[in-house]
Image 1 (cartoon, one colour):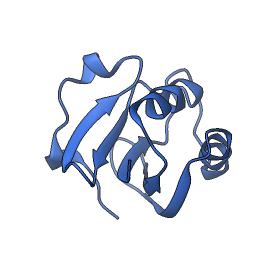
Image 2 (cartoon, rainbow, N blue to C red; image 1 turned 180 degrees about the vertical axis):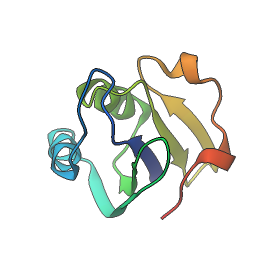
Image 3 (cartoon, one colour; image 1 turned 135 degrees about the vertical axis):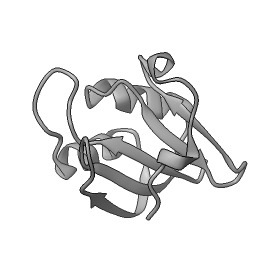
Image 4 (cartoon, rainbow, N blue to C red; image 1 turned 90 degrees about the horizontal axis):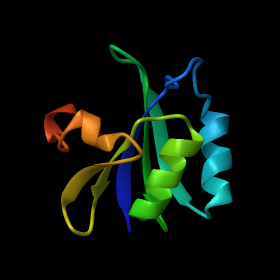
Length: 102
């Protein structure tokens, strides 16, 4: 899948993610990252990336590895967004109004 993703930079338990943490996770699952940026926003900064070699299973694994409830992803091929992760159900449905773009 060719996708845009949003990852909150605060961990669930405590602490802040570093871009290095995310890059290492991408390497682990052979995710190709084309471009990224971190946007400062309330209540937390968001890591936004354009990725390929992406799928829902990788999103779920990445959310767990980075201590996130879920990751917001927008499939650029299918033009559809979803929340993926161990606690995605807590956040409800994907809402494009909250999704940050590159």
